[in-house]
Length: 207
Ligand SMILES: N[C@@H](CCC(=O)N[C@@H](CS)C(=O)NCC(=O)O)C(=O)O
Image 1: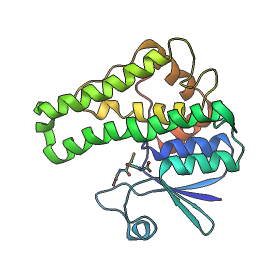
Image 2 (image 1 turned 180 degrees about the vertical axis):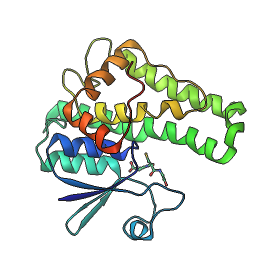
Image 3 (image 1 turned 90 degrees about the vertical axis):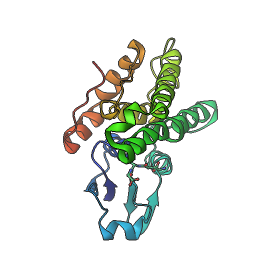
Image 4 (image 1 turned 30 degrees about the horizontal axis):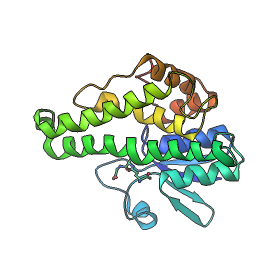
């Protein structure tokens, strides 16, 4: 039994979806709130989620957790070798280390500037950078169903999770028809549906 420290609907949800995909039992511990529980800060002083606990092994950083779990459970969401694996890692890095921080910048500005954030020219630039990244996803999907090609990978799941934060931005971000099609396919997976239900999250950006 794994324990997943999470915040509902956040990037930890991608780990939750993967655990459902591989049918691994998990206890979710929601640490959202103005401050993190002391118990959580002991295992992750950074306070961010996800953190996975597997027996006496504590693993932090979402990408490391996703890769480790996919390998351990032999999930097809991470190809085992060769160029398919390289491509899957490339797009997982894009989701985790390019798209996610772009949203984090916007949320950081909103947290510190409040409603003034949306009138700040820097906020326009942050939103434009997010839009540019989704435009790149849309171009990639012109000739293929998933960002790596014919098959769903970890990156598609994480991108689908991140996209659903968009209604929380102070300015709109739009998704092209191919990108919405990707979200529809990913959200329709039983493991994703189960995670939405277990986290009580509504998926808002696929329509
Ligand atoms: N590099 C970290 C970033 C994780 C991250 O920023 N998580 C967000 C939720 S999506 C979070 O915990 N935010 C609250 C905080 O940092 O206190 C990872 O990929 O695990």
